[in-house]
Length: 48
Image (cartoon, rainbow, N blue to C red; front, side, top):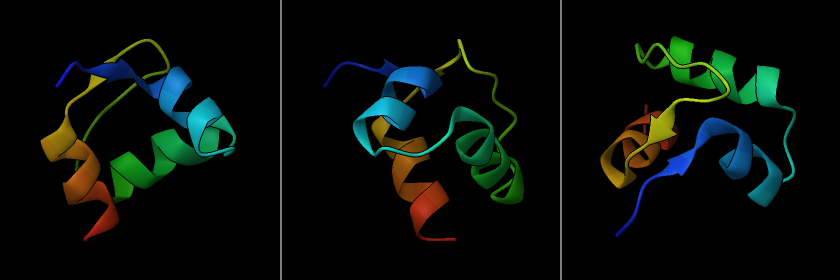
């Protein structure tokens, strides 16, 4: 599976980028808008 950027993931789930960046930060994952997100990071963010 290919990685996606934080921005493209935010667009996909219809969430503001800054909110998604904060969700990753709350899960202990430092990300910016242009960083890629792995499937494992997505799962960690939503299961924390």
